[in-house]
Each structure stands twice: as structure tokens, then as C-alpha cells.
Amino acid sequence: MTRIRPATDGDIEAIGAIWNPLIRETDITFNPVEKTPEAIAAFLSDHARDGDPVLVLEDAGAVVGFAAYHPFRGGQGYARTKEVTISLAQSAQGAGYGKNLMQALEDIAKEADIHVLVAGITETNMRSRKFFAGLGYNHVGSMPQVGWKFDRWHNLVLMQKIL
Image (tube, rainbow, N blue to C red; front, side, top):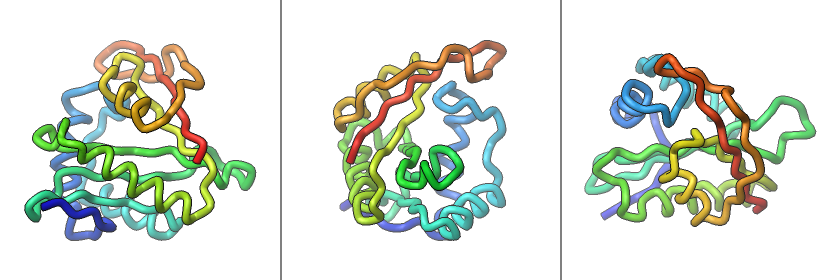
């Protein structure tokens, strides 16, 4: 049985177990530095302070995914546009959990009067691009060579959904 709920400090270890292999082993994120428990605690605290959600998805009591949104850019003119982050444990991929998690995040965004959600995706990450397209996100731009990881440049694709 699955359940989606707000993340708590009790989820720090599980979030790190999902996030750090992606940081360490893939170019899904351009960040090369793994998340310490303290960094994840700050991530949760910063989101709570700013009123931005962090959700986790549990399957049989174990956290297998998380999703969040945060400011797209600074300044009041962008206050109703947010950038999304979603990560699933490899064992949870392909089961529809990501779609459920994003739907819950979008529902919260709508209630908060957020108008646009943006996903920044590594250009070669076709799985994520297809995932977001399936959720109604449209490709709105590409930024060549903005990410550096594994001793090479990576392009970024921007996809957005108007809620």
C-alpha cells in the first residue's frame, strides 16, 4: 500500500538513500556533492520556512520517493512559478509512483495559487523528458553546456506546465 505525505526529519536517511546514488552515479543532477544528513535537514527546514512542500511516497512503510518545489528565480515577479524536483528509488520506478507523487505536488501548487511549474532536465535523460511530457509539461527551451559533471558539459532542457 502506498501513501504520500509531507516529509519529516525522520525521512532524512531515506531521502539521502534515494538522492545520493543519483548524485554519485548519474548526470540526472549536475550537483557532484552528495547530500549529508545535515544538508537534507536544511533542505527540509528551508522548504518549511518558505512554505514550499517536500512530499515523500511510502510503499509498504518504506520511503521510495520524494518530490518538492522551490522558487524558480528570485523576486516577487516569479513568486507564482516554481521549479520541481522528483526522485524515486530505482526499485520504485515504472510503477506509476512518480505520476502519483507529481499529481499530489501539483494539487498543492494549485491550492497555493502557483501558476507554472518548471522541470530542468539533463538533455540526455530521455526517461525524465518522457515522464514530464506524459504529465502535460511542454518543452520550452534548451540551454547548451550549463552543467558540468563527470569531466564534461551537459545541456539542460526546460519543460513547463501551466496549471
